[in-house]
Image (cartoon, rainbow, N blue to C red; front, side):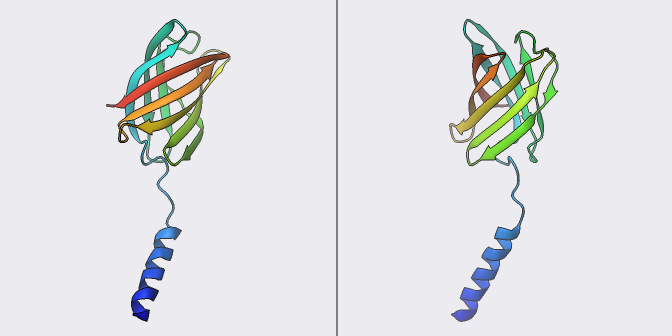
Length: 123
């Protein structure tokens, strides 16, 4: 009994000492609509297992049409936050959460002082 307990404690310690897989729940390719007032477009978000990634917008004024790297990435439970700098002077900042059994990424962000909402699905 004592050996089993010690083995279980050693296994827990070993598992606890492993580095966490950053953004493991979020990794993949996401796509869906974004909305800013009466304006909307499409957003593509690519997140790698280590938290790096790219974001691309269609029809977001002053951001540009090319994919840009994510920065300021944060992860906590089912939430993922990031920033991205496009062609314009503003920085897009966003906070998201996983919904729909991990198949939907809902988020709110801000760009050039205007709020942006988006709902992305795994591709």
